[in-house]
Length: 159
Ligand code: FES
Image (cartoon, rainbow, N blue to C red; front, side, top):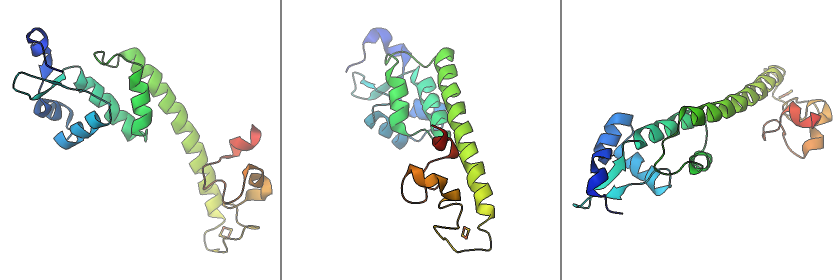
């Protein structure tokens, strides 16, 4: 899409977007390929991004730091019109979700750490004895294999 003369001032080059976000030009191109941001072409055929993409890229970078995969971030951003940057309300909504996910992961990791204590100096990796594999046989209800290593937590047993 060509950049109209009217909104050209609201547009920035890929180099400027890179400079403002600290993201490599190649990574910005990748984000564009992945549909997370989009550019338009100016009269000279060069990519131009909206200034609001600075905030959009920051949003992506922060979400990635918390382990959100790009497909989930794309889903979150898809709720916003392309020309709209994530607002305070958008960030509040997403950061609340991130907080919830982090709490669950922390709980899961603490449980794994506690179970690991019983393994230190053991090395049996026994399906019958090892708490990481099958603590008290309760995790067996969730399926075969080392359930806590495969992503289940004690909470899954409560559901
Ligand atoms: S390795 Fe023996 S209890 Fe885990």
